[in-house]
Structures are given as structure tokens and as C-alpha cells.
Amino acid sequence: KQEVTQIPAALSVPEGENLVLNCSFTDSAIYNLQWFRQDPGKGLTSLLLIQSSQREQTSGRLNASLDKSSGRSTLYIAASQPGDSATYLCAVLTSGTYKYIFGTGTRLKVLA
Amino acid sequence: EAGVTQFPSHSVIEKGQTVTLRCDPISGHDNLYWYRRVMGKEIKFLLHFVKESKQDESGMPNNRFLAERTGGTYSTLKVQPAELEDSGVYFCASSHLGQGARWSQYFGPGTRLTVL
Image (cartoon, rainbow over all chains, first blue to last red; front, side, top):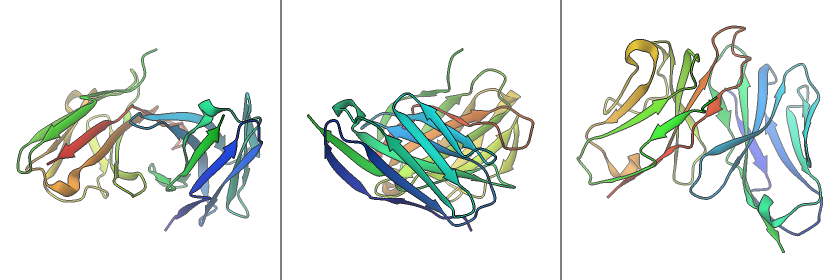
């Protein structure tokens, strides 16, 4: 049974810092892994999707890496800004299924 | 291209009442999924439609929940009667059909359900 864990649960950093959010999963047989952002009272915004054959994806100040063999993904945020404050969710699509398994998220606060 | 849309954005009902949530997937997406996040927990899968057929409803919590997708377009999720523990955010997602499950699922903004 696939389980997804995100560390840390909460993070507070000053503006401008580079930071890393971690996601680990127990079953390495995956189709893809997706990082989402959720703002309070809002829906999910997809940030990056990494297919199982890929090692990393980049979008602007965001970079996500995937190491299937170790069951880990990291989301790197460069030069953090107050507008980056949100909950970041990692979700894994396990091979043979159509349902994403989500982690509980990392609540990020970037202080001005 | 319009994204996944959900209606209403927020619903507040009394325990024992009925509520119907609606999801309109991206045009052309045959796969449609329902997920929900209850307070303090992670987002969890409820069910999956391929066109109008239910492929997997293993995540449906009990028989108070009924999902339909008539005509293979929009979907509704009815909760009858609603209980306090049904409060949470209900997300809908859709994806293309084909190439297995490699297609990305696109999520809607969610419906926040509050049962008093």
C-alpha cells in the first residue's frame, strides 16, 4: 500500500532564502509524481509533474527532483518570496492505479 | 481551454440535509475523479469514472454518497443525509483517456462543504 510522507509539516523562513521541501513514498512503482500548491480557502494548483522516467522538472524558481529507487522527491524553491506562502502537497500516482496518493503537506510561511 | 470547474464553491448545510456537488471536467477528458480532504487529514481518493462508468469506487466512505456521470460529461456527488464528519473540501479532477494513467490529472478548485 502506497504511503506518502512530507517533511517538514511546517516551515517558516525569511524572504530570500532558498528552501527544500521533502516527499517520500513507500512504493517505487509509480507513473508520476506531482507537486501542488494550495492557498487557504482555494483549490489545488499544479506546480510540477515528473514522469517516472524523468529525474527532474523546472519551472521558474521551482525545481523538483525524483529518485524513484529511494522513494524520494524534493521541491526546491529559490529566493523565496512572501507570495510563496501556502501549503505544498506531494501526490504520487502508483503504477496500476488511477488514484493519486497525497501527503499531508508542508505549510510554508515566508516572512517579509 | 477552460479548466475543471466545480459548483458550488462553498456549501453550508444542516446535519441530515442533502447536498449535491457538481463537477465539469475539461472538455474531451474521459477520466473523472473525485477526492476529498477532511479536517486535518490528507486528500483521499473517492472514485473514478471512465466516461459514464464507475471504474473504481473503493474510496467512497459509505452508502450515503452517490456519484453519477450521466452521458459521460459532468458528474454529481450527492451526500444524503449529510453528517458532521462529511465536512471538508471535495475536489474533482479529470484526465485524458489513453496511455494508461500517465496523463496528468487536472484538479478543480474544490467545493468546501460545511455540515452544521
